[in-house]
Amino acid sequence: MPAVRPIAADYRHFVTITTRWMDNDVYGHVNNVTYYSYFDTAANAYLIHEGGLDLHAAPVIGLVVESACQYHAPVAYPTALRAGLRVDRLGQRAVTYGIAIFVDGEGADAAAVAHGHFVHVFVDRATRTPVAIPPTIRAALERLVAG
Image (cartoon, rainbow, N blue to C red; front, side):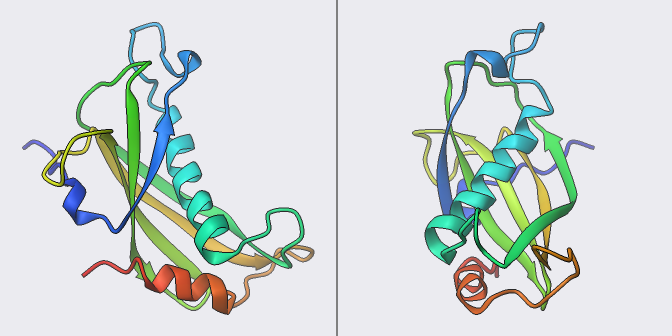
């Protein structure tokens, strides 16, 4: 049974992704591991720009504890992409993002070339113990809650 391909309309926020020459593998398409970098870029760009995360000085940071990706269609450099982002689950200390990669310029009914999830657990920077999601970041994440 083929995997369900989400469409762009299923996501709340988009981040432009610029493919690079080095993203292509020997088979001539973006390598599977590169999509995890795209996921990380999309989630962290949102936290920085919308949630006020200071990567260098924030006392609370998000650590990735789980990720997964399903691949639907190949893309290659120099294709322009965009990552769709939403929040599938928002807990007290963790967030599960739904993320999908689309070819840039396609409409709301565009099917994802890949999609998956990405889990951040928020921790104290110094001790690495889980803590509550900071209020400004939580407010930003609430705007992305799906459904």
